[in-house]
Length: 177
Image (tube, rainbow, N blue to C red; front, side):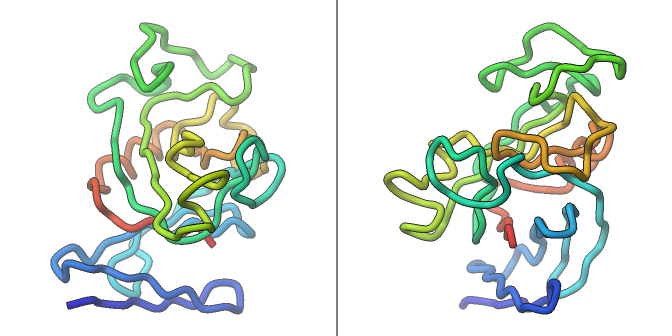
């Protein structure tokens, strides 16, 4: 059985499918408002600010854009690491950066890795979210969260990405609209 949840987003509708009927929670990224929400069925449970790619939305390899469409959470990295821990190639580097750091696009605290579900849109040759290493992760420049600043990832305040990380599970739907 396939379940669909509808939610009105900025004047348009987004349909989200849950294929197993057991897991009713999902992630919604509203790129135009710079917000990421944890949802249950058709209700938003909690919302945080986020940043998207500095070049806006799009799926092309090398574009620096955040891909739109339906994705799945496929991997999670960083469980138990301290806030602001630096992850390089999805592995803890041993460094924990304080809030005064100014480096941009450093992956911190947690990684929620996404894979596209829509062939030719966010999955497949030249547009593949997974192969582009598009994550939801902690931002080094927390003061810029809410403004487009990444190379295509969705970045959040570190304490907030840890909170979201603890709520999501592998296989969960993530809709980026």
